[in-house]
Image 1 (spheres, rainbow, N blue to C red):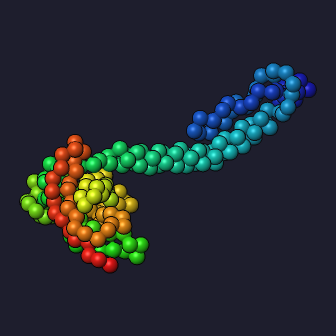
Image 2: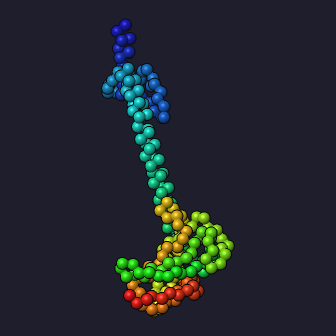
Length: 204
């Protein structure tokens, strides 16, 4: 009887089986392997506590992974948007309905603001009928250069996003131009030039 009692309280250092997504009760007894730390019933209780703790921490690990994936998707979207930015050629401008300029104004800084009539979605007719529809494109601020009395202008597009969903090209800021008459030339990326209009800057 004494030996039976000793066997029932045998101590061991082996920890219960690790949990793999579910809790399985460890064996009721463990082979002695050296220094004693707890009785078999205590080891069983420890195993249950470890399983419970693992189950409680698992959602946190899942949340961390989900957050990382969302961050990666956001970064990928930004990278795609940057990579999709493009200066458009004259053929593209013609395919979306053409381009024209309006009457310029001056802002409080003295900069000349030139309205641009162009819709890169291809749903508007400006100078001719559009032949292409681009539902995913938006127009960014145009690239402009002033050489003497000539304004060189190039429109730029990118992929639509929650920050920019406007297919209408914004006004071009030409800076502090002097009084006089200016011609506007569309400059394609390949260097070809196409006249699109002119405007007059009156005396202030």
